[in-house]
Length: 472
Image 1 (cartoon, rainbow, N blue to C red):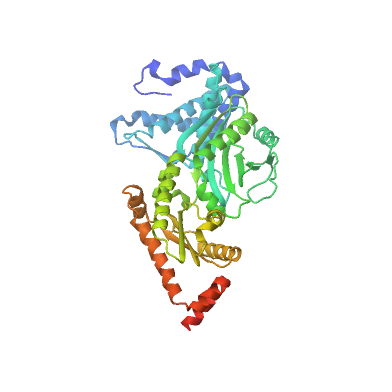
Image 2: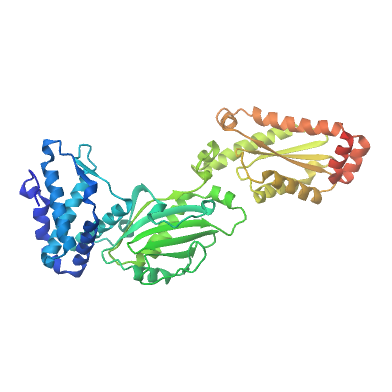
């Protein structure tokens, strides 16, 4: 193939062929060349354009014409096998050069290539590089070298699985198995024999696996977590790993609290390195992308961003707000109403119940009080079923503690409020909220006759009924 003005020693075609001239008889190399030929046969020459308005476009036009001739020979398959392999190898290098030139701003090539064709070409190219590494006897036994991460977001469309419920999805990671000795059937069998794997797909149906299967999904539960993994592998070596949340009654809360950095590291260590790498050949490589994550939880508020930097930062933030609330509670106490405030970044019912239960254990604090007002400060505003959760907790604690009426309120802190507290140490928002709620319940008590208040203290659950009668 012609190479324009390149000198002979700069021409890759002039030195690559002699290196591998003895390899054309090897079955592994023949398999790679066959895969090159199959891809070249499917290349649409109509989708390759050359800007012939430039005087320097002679080489590009000659290269396209040569590729068209190579493709015709490969499709007709009438040449001797030796020439067939040489043509396929030449076409592979030439087409690779075209793809490389597309990355230049002044490229004279214009091509339309489907995502699937690019993936297939990447696999074949990587298999060829793997053969080169093997030919040069370079060791790739270290796991750190055998699992490579591309700076590209994993695309779930690489292996389309139809509609999946993204509300329960935590992460998707995709990649390619680079293995010139890739055996789809053996990889699936080896992976299935690893501990903890089952032949189940995303719908919970047993995966049907035959020699004609183009892709298969295998299931594994992540121990001591409500997370399950679905590993889908195609017969081309493309893989997709979906992590889904199950077995927890509050999926939304769990999803918001997931540390994706650790989850990604776990998938790489336990799934890719410990399981998938031992299911392929010794010289195989894995190339994977950056995980795709799901849900609104990726939009962090100010406190979440600070707290996520380090556990000590999270502890310091909560301690600062806790001290301020404790001081404000003590300064605002009156004879009949006890206010107890706390800050929480976790508004799940279980978490709040535990915090409130801890406060109510200190019985000596509310001796002589007729009401306890529990104030929850939070930087999270939109929580599903929060009002129902607060009502359930209020009823539960009122049943456990007689003679005292318990109220639970939530106060939302905006980003501006949080910055005032943490940056300027201005606690006026906290103080105002506590005083306003205390005043509201004092005024409410003032509107209830004294004899009714005595009955309420004996049976606090009847307060709402008496208040309705007063209004009527």
